[in-house]
Image 1 (cartoon, one colour):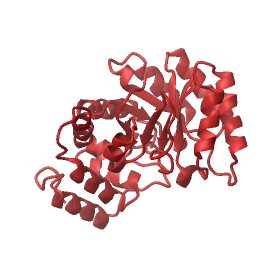
Image 2 (cartoon, one colour):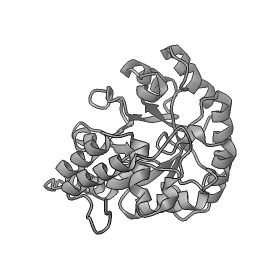
Image 3 (cartoon, helix red, strand yellow):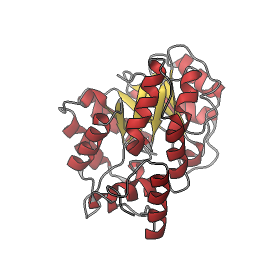
Image 4 (cartoon, helix red, strand yellow):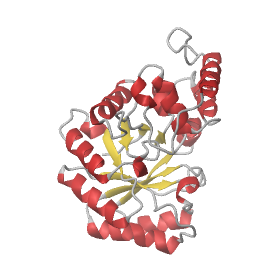
Length: 294
């Protein structure tokens, strides 16, 4: 069950043949939770989900079903096909997964509110017990949820549409729906969102900022003085200067070469940009030369 907190949109770790390294991806998620994340979403955009096969996702789901942290493991679908979405959700439900982060289909321009409503309606009709976090990310899907579109979905399916990850940032400041989870897609907006009544964040960069993001969240919850938010924002804004997936894989590959494996068209940062990134992070006292030599 998804609750308030700091969540990571997890990276996917690959084998040399560019198939999903199931065990390494699970270990990555474990590490994120150990370092402070409330939970982890696998197979979002950060996990290159649209580049992975359904079979790989299903193998992963069957592996995490008996994991000790399974209640903190959540799934995206990362599928454009309506039927692939339904197929994957039904498969995951066999293992008692109910909560999914689902973006409207990408690629085709001109998605309408009516078409997107029908997309979620058909998923819910086929899987009536599903719980959906809407994924609002116009940059990737070509569609931006309006407050009216979200409200209509919640009114039609109050037991199914339980929240929103807002990576277009047009909803988290103003949309107010009772018992609805709102997560900005950046930890740079975590504290601001919490002050406005949001539930936390679901972010790509919490793959590295996990501990300080959790510190900001906990200090807000406990009404303590904020000491890490400026650093958190600065680190996020540094990663935002690069392609996020490339930057995150490049950052993690310094300690583990498996993160160098990326499915085309995704690539690592150039050596010059990787060094530049690490130097900027070091100046923010986020990393040390000893642990992450540029």
